[in-house]
Image 1 (tube, rainbow, N blue to C red):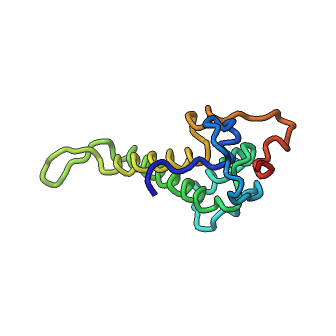
Image 2: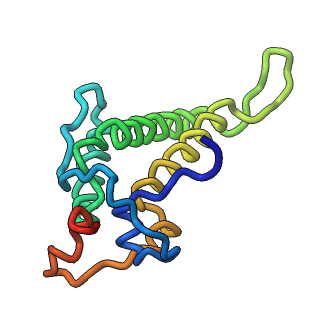
Length: 151
């Protein structure tokens, strides 16, 4: 497929459907529910999982189908933290065997992790730019937030 991926209906509804295009009433409607935490996540990734899941549940955008995407984000976050810690101890510059000084290869790892995390966060509405488009309903109005009732 070409072009930008479509915005999930839940995020469109939270944003007030700014494009005024019809919302897909045949999109699969899943229950807002925390997925199981993948067993392969390390301690850092699990802490990030535990931090992000309540946020996404309050935003009402997390379903059990999001396990892999959220697990990937947490796993890449753990890789980012590991690479940053190693970068701190080894420094920004790296001297090759031939004597040339170059940027530490870990910088590329850090930058790639930041890019991947930003992309996945955007999918969940977790970046400031994505969040500014969302309009939260009144705190006690649970029915207004249920995007599965739209159709």
